[in-house]
Each structure stands twice: as C-alpha cells, then as structure tokens.
Image (cartoon, rainbow, N blue to C red; front, side):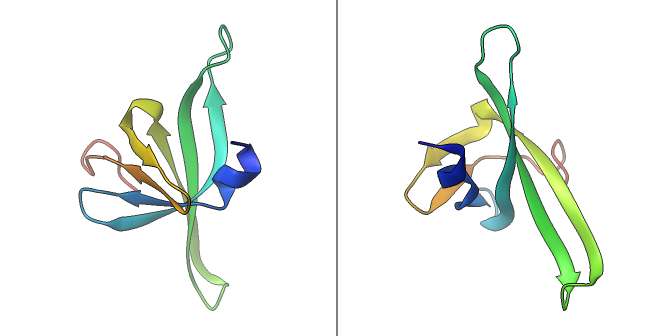
Length: 82
C-alpha cells in the first residue's frame, strides 16, 4: 500500500464512530524505518473559511484495521484529544 492510498481513506474511531479526518503524514522510527504513528488532519470550517484545522497523532498500535475505504482505530478521547 502506498502513502497516496492511505491519504484517501477516512480514519474512524471505533469507540464512538467519530470521523477523525484523513491521513496527512506518517511518523517513522529513524533507526529501523518502522511506522510509529499516523497523523490525521481534520478541517472544522464553515463554508471553508471560518474555523480551524486540527491534527491528531495516532500511535500505530491503536490501528485495528485498514480496509479498502477506511482505517479503524481505537482511541481513548481522554488520552488523545482531537
């Protein structure tokens, strides 16, 4: 799977079925090249101008499944606020 394919998938938290955005970046371990986390970007704008963009770093161990259209994650909101 390529990074471009990951970017097209919605990230969904299975705890509350909330959409967390799309993958915008990956964090790698510089020593061995393994992926440590996904970074998602979500836009909370009205009409595309009013609001803010938010990012969330999702540890690789919290990813439960990568499907053809979505990525399912299991995040506790207290530890990983949006």
